[in-house]
Length: 209
Image (cartoon, rainbow, N blue to C red; front, top):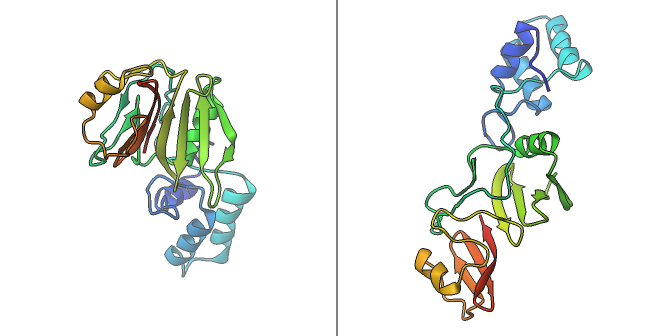
């Protein structure tokens, strides 16, 4: 995508960067944009409205907020996990529910060669957008047009901010993350914002949401 070269179109986009979920920074909801044009220019000529419509739809012009370099997530990122769910968890530089919509996931796919769509989860109405890397050891999920969750398993070479990693012991894990709910199983720890799975007393999977 590129910024519009016309000042009129650029200002139009900048003033209507609100999507269906109310989050700022979205410019691809064209119906919302055109509605705003009509409202802003009720007394303007139809020629102006037609010009904007052709520029946006016919010319394929789209605007973005500010150019933001895409960070390619690696297999060794630190997972910061607030198990109580009172603060944003993050995978490396990607913070959950922080306004990075589906378009950021697509930018990762376009920019970072080691990432691909996971098991056909391409997003859309009622569906999640999921991208995968690290021999399927890291899966990043977008839902409700937000970076929503992370699934980590064998292939993730990083650690949590408390030093836990794939292969950490059950005992070490509950000392690092004590706020779990009793699941009745030593193979599963349930937290308000995620779950951890164990086999033979060792961590094998973590899902953080």
